[in-house]
Length: 165
Image 1 (cartoon, helix red, strand yellow):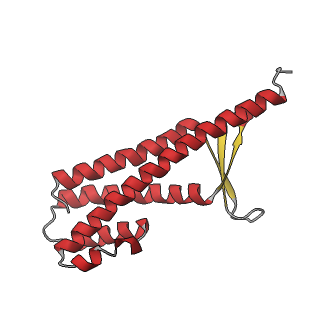
Image 2 (cartoon, helix red, strand yellow; image 1 turned 45 degrees about the vertical axis):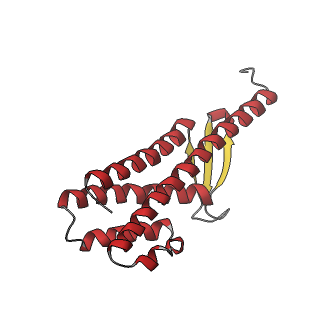
């Protein structure tokens, strides 16, 4: 026997859940800041296009629609350098990948596996063929937050350096 008691497992479970909750909370804040930044970019583009009244209706666009809007703008913008377009396309791909992972995290069911030091996110209806569970370490959840924060910084720098709206 390894000497682990039920009490030890319970404390480990509580600590793991508390730590994961804190990281996931930070992820929500980081994603919100990123969403706001893309929203401001969309509003700037709309103002440039003379659609000031539409910029006030930005709340109607979810994150995915904001990414699509920026992508469509880049595909038609004649005054944007090819380097800026390439940079933004890369940032949009990363934003979309983070969006998909965030969606699974938000819509999934959470649990912890104390014996493995894993945080579990189960997506899909119980007992359905589509159900799957993704196991995360706390470090992997931290990495997700860091990716969100890095993308936010990279987007801000690209907008300034490349003169994007």
